[in-house]
Image (cartoon, helix red, strand yellow):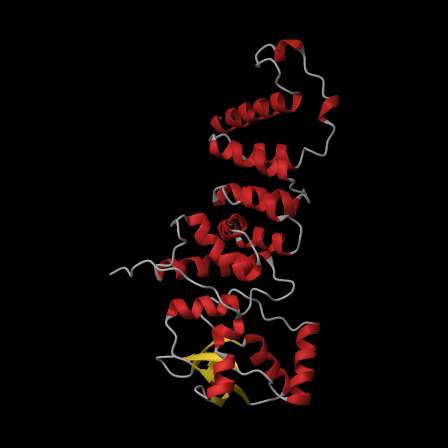
Length: 294
């Protein structure tokens, strides 16, 4: 049975963890838990990297211990699921510790997702893929809880999702679109080879069409501009996108197509105003279809 809709007041990370409550009333007890009993959050979207910041965290733990306890919840199969504290656990491992201080709370799945996302989303240097899957998880969790904006619109509900990171609802929805990309294309977005805006347009292509794009970008070192991505999306929506068309748009764009001379006899078969590139594309598509029919 669906829960009634309710408004939500998104709070700070400290409020979500109840840190002030812990310090003032002692309602939550901090316990030391063996690292082998701490398990990552299911489908945790944030990467834990052994980078320079991790080195700093390791040194801090060696010098001062774990200053902020992790937040966990009990697992039915034993041990605890980390909600906040994945990087701290890894730092404890690298620092040679066998246990880590944690706060244990019995959160529901949806509450745990919201807290997990909000406790990580304000970090520096968040990757596009991390935001994409984190926002998707949080939006689904809020919908399960019956949370809606005052007007009930999806766009304003998305506003609630991005509030902690100061991202608009439209930006949240665009990030969520990235989850429709092939993992290999999404990795190119993370590395900056493909910008977020063109990647959003590419996310509307079928998986096969995305494979064609990937082959051009990786195999032929093609770049993908916003204009190119929009062209690909438009051709896909019209059912006209072929592997050859992808190559023409992405791989042939660098050539100076303005120098191509087409006989007048050829141009007479095309609508007035068609550019040489558009005529070339149609010709190549016809040739490809002819070749496949042989």
